Image (cartoon, rainbow, N blue to C red):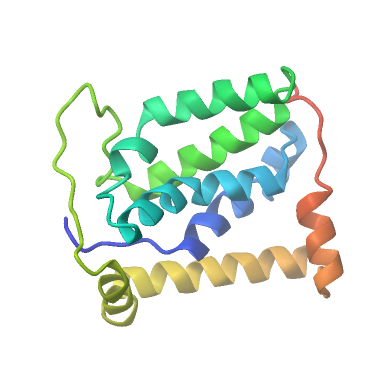
Length: 174
């Protein structure tokens, strides 16, 4: 399915809106900033490599091996506190789910054909302007973000940053 792109707004908005559901919000604590970083990290790596002419980074950043490595590294880096690694991992997993079926989840254990774009920026702009799936997902992402802003009364930049940065940092409740 070459040519299907999900852009960053949807990747960020979906995990945030899911964790705003009262039942989930009441059961889990998470770090919003780390969740957001996790939700775009695979593409930050993949797209950076492509822009630098290093080929597709999907084999590195869109795999379960990457998810496991990120969890272990952040778990050790945060001195075995689980909220940051859990939030990052959940963000990455949401990203991979939203990218299905074009995700090489089991690479390098199973072969996967990577698509290399000669001119990624033009391809992404073309998709944004002409692909209804991309347009719909980005509009939905904006709607989700607006719902979060209104629901939490985030009517200023300072309140938005506080909401993102000062999310609770305690363990997942059993």
